[in-house]
Length: 126
Image (cartoon, rainbow, N blue to C red; front, side, top):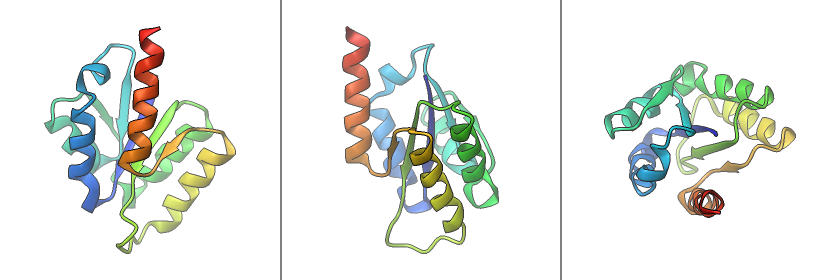
C-alpha cells in the first residue's frame, strides 16, 4: 500500500502527531509512505521511513497528483490549512480533482484520515 502525505505549514505538527498514533501499523513492510519535501522531513524526524518529493510549492503537490493519475497511490492524506492563503492553491485544487477523477481516497483533515486508517487496520486484522 502506498500512502501520500502532505500538510500545509500550519498542519505539519498535526500530521506528525496523527501518524504517531498509527506508528506500529505504518512501520509494516508493505506500507510505503511518500510525502512532499518539507512534510516528509518532519515525518522522517519522527522515525518514519518516507520517500521525499519536492516541496509542495515547488511542484511536490503536482508530483503526487501525477502519481495519483498513474494509479500508483492507494490513499492521499492532505492536512490543509483552510484559514491561510497558499500561493500554490491551483496545484492543491488540481491534486484534489485528480484524486476524484481517479477514485483515490483523499482525507483533508485528521478526522477523515483517522477513519481511513482505522478501517485499514480492521481490514488487515481479518
